[in-house]
Image (cartoon, rainbow, N blue to C red; front, side, top):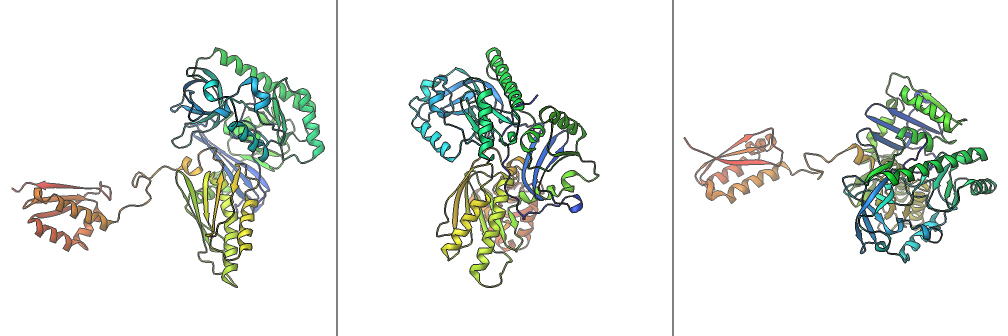
Length: 547
């Protein structure tokens, strides 16, 4: 049975020649879906023109919840924030903003028109309007005359859908505007609107699809026509419309009978989501390395895609599929702070909880003519790599890019325009400000889920995420200061210092004289002993009884 899928049908950007990824036999493909599936983890890579554009990872022990529908209970209403916290059965209460609370009697007036919407819901949320529609929607929310305390009350049971996964310390973002994505249509039971994907450019086809959906849709319900529906027949669209309408009725019946909080509807797993939302005419081939998943994909396509336009292939090579296609190497590259450019320059990517900072450097590139030309070429090359890494790593929030300073305003404008063009078709919307006099570009990118770094990595248990350790010399001096601080207790005694082997070695060599001076001042005998089990920054000082 087809069900919803976290995230929209992915918008495929124009292929870039950078970040090349090999394919077996050296053959280049305009777009491929590579699926690596096993018992504990499934990974889906979208490869465009030989380049890893996007990576999705789902682990059996930690399956995502975006797009899931829950029966929740309002636990707290916050008039000051015009929001509420809702218990949906997770460790942390979910966050519900006033603009995401559906009031049926206001649907036709309060909700934005989605006639130019994208292909589907953004990470399980309602269909996204175009830029003007989003601005109008935000204005409607700010001017909304019905406050949250008049919409919800504590203890109330409501039907909600997860719009954004929990990120870091934040709980899930939820909405009461439910969406049920299908292969060709996105059903919106709380909005009486019909939208058509902007990626369908032919006006006659757009009008044909809109007329068909307006005719077949249930009363007071809405749809967004996805890109995959281009050229679809009326019967096919009608059948899908009936299916999602029946699915919605099933969800409503379960909501009435189920206790709160509890899950009402769960999304497809990542394999079938990829087939439904990524397996479009723009994809030349889907390759999967699991025979069981291959059969599931075949059954799915036979049911919902009777005439698939692209090839499904079972990979049977001896080499792991992600190694064969060079994807494993690109994943490791995406976890590195420093990314080298072909010219010899490089970029450094540093992420914090609030923002991501990207620094561009010329590195080994010395250019051919003059300094300004060298800098411009490095910055333009960095633009393509930055757009590639933002998408692959799924970095979101505030992003500050420190380009190399350029003297000419025309060159600064060229870099800004290049960055806008490189991110234009990214499915996550971004807002890019013009370059400042200091060579900085500030931008935001919609944060929808955890970055690849957060999924695949964890803070270092040794440095606890600091990224730096105190030097051995600093630790030596801390120990000496601690001895002097407690010299009244240690005066004339025999003292044992337990420390990391490298710190102990420094006491025996470079810092031996400093230790002897402290011994003289305290009239004590200080012994240093190495303990491999100690952290570099940790030590233990104890007084030893003299026999």
